[in-house]
Image (cartoon, rainbow, N blue to C red):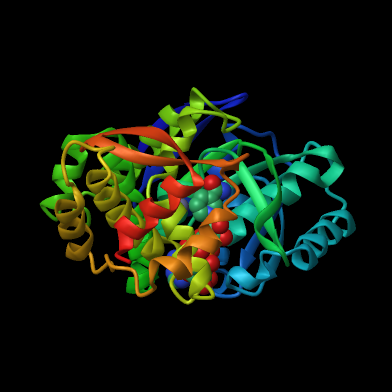
Length: 352
Ligand SMILES: NC(=O)c1ccc[n+]([C@@H]2O[C@H](COP(=O)([O-])OP(=O)(O)OC[C@H]3O[C@@H](n4cnc5c(N)ncnc54)[C@H](O)[C@@H]3O)[C@@H](O)[C@H]2O)c1
Ligand SMILES: [Zn+2]
């Protein structure tokens, strides 16, 4: 097992290992006295892993209650958020009790938001079971639910008290769901660590999965710790996300987040070179890395189909939009574009 410390407004540890779900009780007892723990999971993950977690927590002296939401993005909404809060209240959780998010990013985000708001905030622990949740959403402290007008529109910054990542849980993931995490991992390498990119390029992701998750968490930590509330450096983590989000939305979410970000990264690299924001064209090498792991690299949509959607991006400030470009593999910076430049960025990125 590997353990890293993450310093945010509160500090916490992330444990990464193989088969560590069965010792989660011991890991939780390092940060909490015996208390009641509400394990929130979903209808796919629950039958696979809830029992192991429950047994381990009970053996460590915790009282465990469990609650499940239907699996999938469509559950990350106010209805199920309300249902979780009602469940916590009816289970009589107090501020010294804990929540556990056992699942992917959906369970992590909605449970985190419930933890941030129940009794004005109680502690929670992330047990990510998708590669994406391990590599990205379980650290960083962003929690959210979707509103009918858009994704993640209601939420809070609420860091977990611990993260427990058992890479053995990835064995049951569908291939495409696993690949979503690969896209964010390749993104981390592109914005921060050339040697990490080379390791991924050589195909070592599967054999070195624990090291990979650790490096993902470290890179994210380093961007987030200098900018917890997302006002500057943290924006580098949005590399590939402006065009990516537009592709994801245009597809009605049929193209999942990581797959859309893969397309977004290749498009952003191509556009940045063509428009002179990057000295080199990194689009081919990025494509090669992504395709190695079965990810798509070209937008199925035309630029004009994406421009309107992308112009409404949350990251917009006034009449300018910041996009992230690479100055080298392992180095990113932000450029501020007016709307005309932004349209050319998308046109050059995905072809007219
Ligand atoms: N908070 C953040 O910083 C942040 C960052 C990135 C993404 N997100 C959010 O994360 C969500 C996407 O996360 P995700 O891709 O993990 O989606 P998800 O939670 O919906 O999981 C994907 C699917 O895999 C299933 N699953 C989970 N673990 C499994 C396992 N071990 N074996 C078999 N099936 C399993 C789930 O039931 C679901 O059907 C989005 O809502 C996104 O907005 C949040
Ligand atoms: Zn992302």
